[in-house]
Length: 520
Image (cartoon, rainbow, N blue to C red; front, top):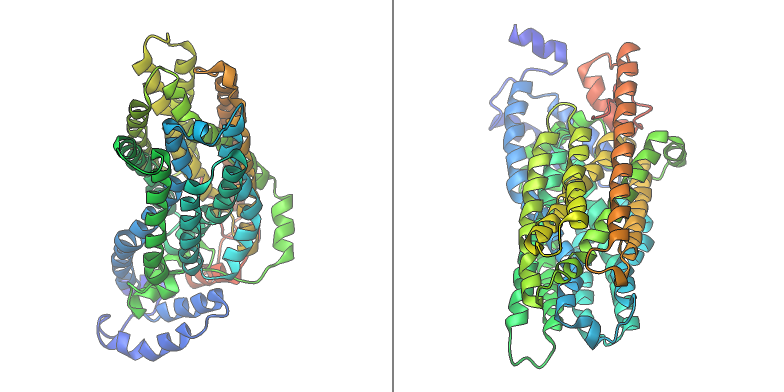
């Protein structure tokens, strides 16, 4: 019976032990394949065809080992990089508690513009980075950029006025703008569609870790005495130096995809390709296909993704840059303000991991995004209504805003999971991050200085934004559910198991692939 199932699935039984002679027999074939770098989809397709010579049960068992290696060796590198990226952005928020505005002669809404300068830079870089990521090795690009943005982060300690700060933050945003789409792409290349939301939640939960570390770093910098430079400058120098040092690790050890992971043997790389072949998306295709860009622009579901991304970006821009000002407005001194932000980071870690885990369950991705919006809404209502004397209760309402990290990253995974066709996915990711960054730019400007500390105009605006995000995500999830049912009803399935796997390497879009199903 087991043999019949192997034959029905199109997988040939293996005549020898998987760990010895079979691997040696195919060693030369693997080496020849690894020299073909011009098209990773062709390389991946041939590596997948090699896997058909092995017993499927053995592949399944070895796939578990490969997944564990990726989880314990690659994922921590992604987590640390993303933590440093977020810490670089948050340095402004922490430095603001130690007299940054006074020392740089900022007045009026100058700080709001400096806070959004980073996102203007990200906005300018979002589309070019996504196009570049399709054509160049991801790990090499990120490794090189870590040196650049670490140096720029340190440059923030040298500026002395609003204009200088705006320029430095602009270029910092432009350089760091490649990280988020790169990690979305790399996650889609290394893990299955079922695994991606939770893995993405893991690397993004380091935002919370960076908030805890950043708050402690800011506290330690504030306690330092006898410095020849201002305390707020020390924060930029420490974080920038850490970022530059980490660049060496990424440059030498992070893989560009399953095909060149140094921590895997050649056989395990083949298994890694076999694992992700079930995604129906191949590995990577460097050619730009204009019809796929047109399809992206005419796909109504994509516009719902863009709208949700802008709404979540608006909330993120507000929360990220003004949490320090809100808490300080509740009559806390600078040192206490820094420490008070640490629990919010811990809450974000728990929320990202918890909702990320739930999103792995069948048809729970969209629902997890919706659930992640609710705590933030409750917190905003609390900031508006709780008496000002209950300042610790108000701070707790501020901590609830950090849950926004979970729906953000889960929404980021949607293009990587539900958009097939490499050019179409690149186009969607590019536009998506333009919209997301646009929201981050708008967010801080909702806070009117004379409304401190409750900022009622901003709080009411953010409540409306949450409602919009929930609406757009609910419509998108429903639309995908209807489309899946339509395809099932029409019998749009591949005729054979091998055909289904190989078709994913033909660079077909989610509309063209006859057995593609949207993850709900």
